[in-house]
Image (tube, rainbow, N blue to C red; front, side, top):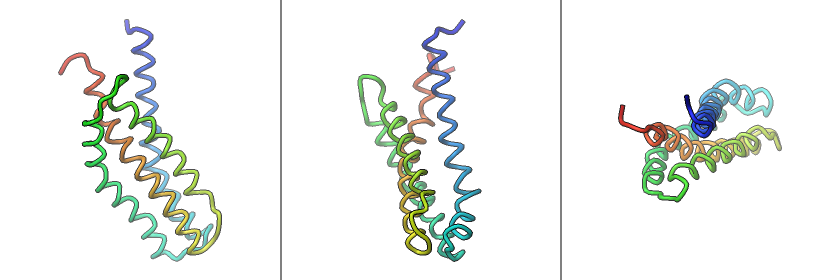
Length: 140
């Protein structure tokens, strides 16, 4: 029977799937219609606002993984990256859909929010993907 701490650890790990699901699903489903229908941005500009942060995340994630591998802390090297990355992604999502203004300025605000979200997610995801190896008792 699992110990209470291992159950809590597994539930905490499972909650990380919420961050991954939100980042991979919400921008694809909601961001383009939000930019074009709500903020009145042209389709080409809206596509760039979505593409640039996604490309940035692809380029940044290997660096974030190396950073997580090189970080050594008393309570686990990946915990800080998971916590700050998850909270940063939440803050970025809030900024992304804040809708402070319409048009190109709104697209810029949304793009910066998405860039913040993508940056935070890169650090979260690199650490989160490596975490099962740290949690396992044996290589099996």
